[in-house]
Length: 416
Image (cartoon, rainbow, N blue to C red; front, side, top):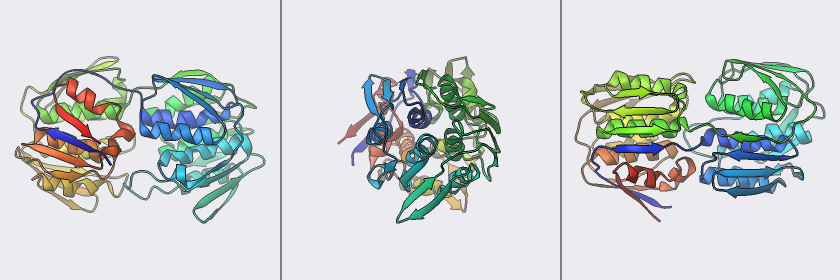
């Protein structure tokens, strides 16, 4: 495991270009399985999770090539329907291949997935959706076996607007006979991006980006060319980092409407955010104040930004409250911030932060991807040199983070 070193930083200043969305790239790469042809995916971030997904596709028989931020997937000779734990245990998104395999090959054998340990994140909603479409499944020795000779469209109402379940049901439904309606589904921008890709391939999907998606099944799909949307969580992380250090930055390659909950909260705290179509300016030139944050499904405040804003609020005078409604283990980073002199108390799904301006550098351990980013933010605001262990988490979701932070004036680097 590598380490990430952070020295106390002056206010971040400059311009940074946001990379393509990891949470959009992974399901779209899985969706390439459906076409049986060649798809060209652009603006794909260089991340370890993306590399693992490409390995999964290769294992299933696809031909993969990469040139910069462009990945070409030829799935015409894909034939395997089995994914071992050696691959699925590394990333949660591996299970999204199930819907594509079920639609194309009528069978899938997948080891239960791994990923960051931020909560149980069961796959029961995925399997309920598949069952509603006519499939049968059983679980044995950590593997899920799913089969369905004929997927048939139906009405599915999710118990919770799960992003992964929505994506998997979409993938399974596009080649089903008849019409599938998914209600109480996820409305995240990544859902709309997946639908956009599938429609370019010949799918008939409407309503993506709302809580009701309608999918009229088609007989076949073709490959296409598609550009991944910008990563709203990476953008939000830089915005919060600017807020924590009192910085002044310009974010390029963003979609402002995807970040409304983050910009609104930062403005409430006292951080100026000026939004344009594909740029956001973040400037700290006034007094910052404590806030109350509650994570919610999109368009609410994203759970993937919870730990980062908590780190920033540690630096602001006053008492802040954070309530986590999505994942039960999202506060695992709190003991590490306490090691840096943060004053945080957790009661169930709520954290009470008594902010101050005296964070102190320490050696800390990253517990998940977004916690890693939070510790960097705290390290830049703290006095001294902070060493973050288990920094490989960062390479799962932030492309060239050290280089981008250095371009803004931060004193950071990886140690392998």
